[in-house]
Amino acid sequence: MTQNAATTPDEPSEDDVFEQKAVRLAKRERLLAERQDAAGGPYPVSLPIADTIRDLRARYSELEDGAETGETAAVAGRVVFSRNTGKLCFASLQAGDGSRIQAMVSLASVGEERLQAWKDLVDLGDHVFVSGEVISSRRGELSIMVSEWQIAAKAILPLPNLHSELSEESRVRNRYLDLIVREQARATVVARAGMNASLRATLGAHGYLEVETPMLQVQHGGASARPFVTHSNAFDTELYLRIAPELFLKRAVVGGIERVFEINRNFRNEGADSTHSPEFAMLEAYQAYGDYNQMAALTQEMVQKAAIAVAGSTEVTLADGTLYDLGGEWPRVSMYESLSEAAGRVITPETTVEELLALAAEQEVAEPAQVTHGKLVEELWEHFVKGSLDRPTFVMDFPLDTSPLVREHRSKPGVVEKWDLYVRGFELATAYSELVDPVIQRERFVEQSKLAARGDVEAMRVDEEFLRALEHGMPPSGGMGMGIDRLLMAITGLGTRETVRFPPVK
Image (cartoon, rainbow, N blue to C red; front, side, top):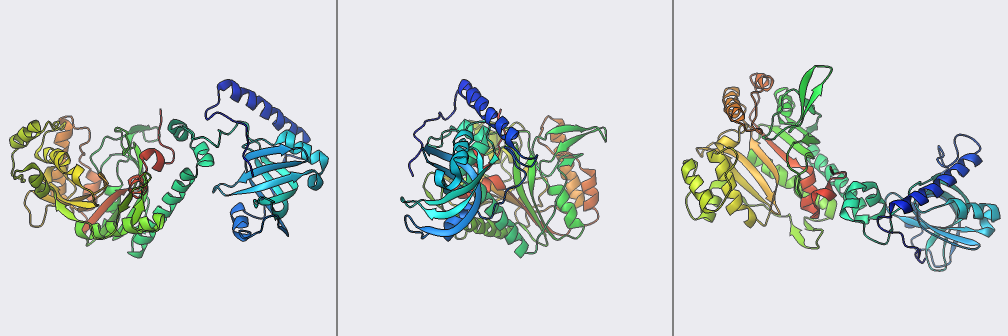
């Protein structure tokens, strides 16, 4: 089947859109005037659909050119191509999954009146129901020789030109158009769904239970981040959109749900770039009687099985065509040791702030907003080491003062049992051996509150309700968190604007 020769601009002018809209509205009025009852017209309540386009393509994949089946099908789809030639009209109908079938509307099959109505009323972008015999055209195109047809939904605005790329801005602002015209957009939605199903299956196989925790909280916590603030009229108080589900999931562990997880939304009132979004999906999981080593093994398993679910292999093909291997055992490196090796000098938890400031100045590394040993170490590590990581890598054992919810390392003074997982140069996940001592946790919160008093907007506050829960006894536990958007980025090589279905735009 040849393509429509007419050219529609990627982004038509306002005048063109206005004219097309006026014409289509007139057609809508005609359909309304001709309907028999309120269930019909340009937006009927129901249609006698008996088949899907995908199923028909699978069922008749071996049909010879020009063959007739004698079987009737009834499908609906969006018109993405139309060619009217005298006594025979052709249209391509596209299902939501991108599969297509040709509709052939002939004078001999539908009669002069319905053929003319098709020519007068059907536009590109309309949803149309057709019923008729399944055939193969002389050119081998799987087709329906239409005996009955009906408008399923009249499109008032025109589609963009399907033969040229939408601009990135158009794709992001009008994701529905992106999904209609671009196979990759549809494939990304499918990939994300398969990935999430895989994560849930892996966690379920390990005995984890999925729960939901509050998104509106009277006090934000569970991470170091700037929150969004709103006001509750019902309670006459300020509420925070959650920055992490951690403190509520830990309450569940205290309550006896020893393996628990949640996949849900978090909100952080911070910058937005290719790897950050103010609203994002997060997986967090907690395991009683586990630690950060077990969470590393679990995370590796989840990521590798998710890659297989999406790409069929742990060796994935990224958006730019390059291959990236997520398989095998991932290396584990010490933050302090890797920093020392890269910087060419020994850096330990005992290294003074003054020494770290001098090194930062020497390397032209910007000082963090709040100058502490731990924040300087992390900034220097990102400068010296982060860019050299190629394979998925667990970076182990972080400074004590940047990890208020993590227990001290069992054998290394001055560090905590925490790792960050880096994949393709960005942080994908983090995990702790959780701090479960309520007395030490209170001390850590107090230290954080001092930072907050000095202007650190990301510092945590003292959360009395969470401390009260801890005081009832939380078993030793491991916990992990992983960004869902970032996991899809790691597997596909796509950026935030593609992995987030409807990203925020100004």
